[in-house]
Length: 350
Image (cartoon, rainbow, N blue to C red; front, side):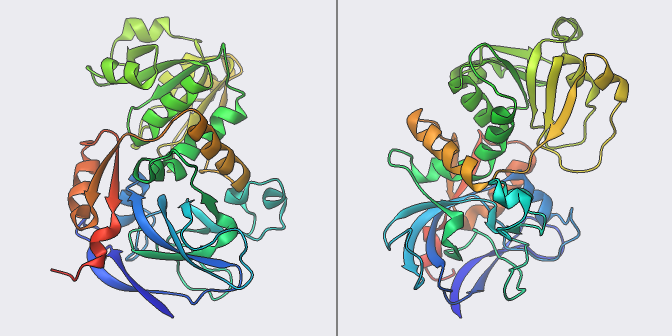
């Protein structure tokens, strides 16, 4: 076994993570080892740390970039020194209908998630990227394109692909009208990607004062959802609404803004909710969601981001400040994604 160092949650649901020694498997033939340089802090990390899914302690982190340090005997896609990016899925069955069409994230045998998942061979629980080293099958690592800053690119591997797949599924391009509800870690990348695809983008927000940021990110307009007159005027306006709000909320006002045959993609709150079916009936609306992305679309998303100079707006902090990052994330105090610099784990614990 290999050992490395990382940050693990406690069982009390607090944001006070503990620095621990982590065991990583010896490399299998098709594995690579990655020195984790930068790992994004996702809102779902906060959910998992707080025990929303009923888990015990976890080592979070599922959007990271780093450098290959070793390769297995049959791994021929990377060599030591290569820059790579890793997302939310690190293995799948490879043979089910979902895997065959490149949607490993929807594997019928359940994908192996980057943390809190079950290794398909030895049954161990996966431990995530809040650590200095990660070992995975090479086919689930992606070359990090030249020109993408590794810290700002890390959130592309969860937040970015979560926005990209519904945009591609809806056929968004020039002439499309897209709304993004919530301007956070997910939403700001949704604005950038939709605008780069040629859509007219509107940010939907409850908070005044977001219009300048929204415009800089590529949005043409900002609609304050507490303004009833403007909300009424937006009825039936949008071909696609990317709902990135990470808390319980009423979907009906958003559905009413979807155009005929328009789509509401709920992406920020993956927990039970209720839907007024008449809001779907009126205009033949579609309600959908997405869970990050498969290998083919993730690779294409990275290429697109490199072509259009798209990356996350990040605040990089030393990994020892992870509690501060999580606490601030819980109150929405970040523009727009925290990224942990894991290099401080090379130093002895203080």
